[in-house]
Amino acid sequence: MSKWSSAALLLTLAGLAGDAAAQTAGTCVPASERKGRTLGCYIIARQVIPELPRAPVYWYLDTYPDLKAAQAAKGPNGTVVESYGKIWVFTIATKGTRPATAARVAEIGPLPVVSAKEYVAAYTEGTYKPGNKSDIHHHPGAEAWHILEGEICVETPAGKKMQRVGDPHVIVPGGVPMQVTASGTQMRRAIVLVLQDASLPRSMPASDWKPKGLCQ
Image 1 (cartoon, rainbow, N blue to C red):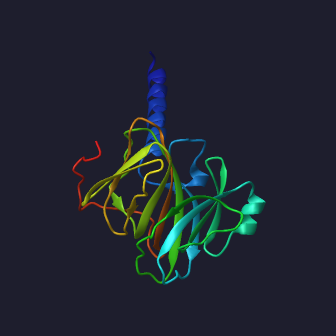
Image 2: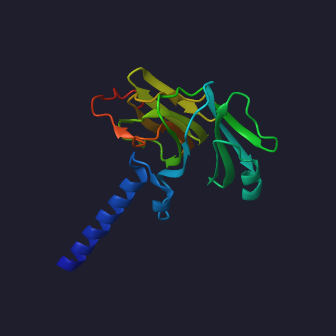
Image 3: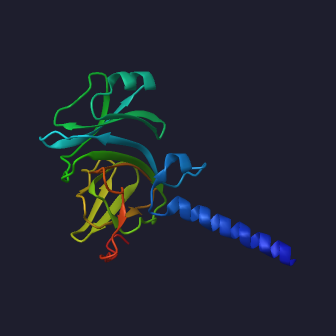
């Protein structure tokens, strides 16, 4: 093989490795940076919420037949999102909130709320192969998962929690270090919320904690 062929091969392999890392790394990127990839974590919506109700709040996931119906039904603190082939309205609201025309998919909460002058509901979708792990990190607000396929194992200093389709929802309070693993044998597909302090980054490294490997 010529030196030029060898160099081309090395560049190709490096590109493939970089693409694989981008698809499976724990950092979430804006959906506009997906570039045709299927694996990875992508930020699909971000809604600023100036003030939350004093009563306990929940994350509601509802589906609609089309964008027009979703936009018409969206209430305060509601976000219209296209994800995994469906039209969704994600809403942060108090107990019992239910739009008249919605197909309710899930009610998740109550969510532990951090003290902040302003909030952001950051929504992501994540598709991972079994065994893929997130970075060791924490959020400036609660993180909650809605699993569409497969399962997750979340390790924190308190131990591990599992969530499969139809299981009670896992919620991790803000500031708690964690590592999330796509466990089981199926591809993991999930929609995720971080309800956070708007003045801080969505995710930060948790370098002062090391997992015990409970989710191996």
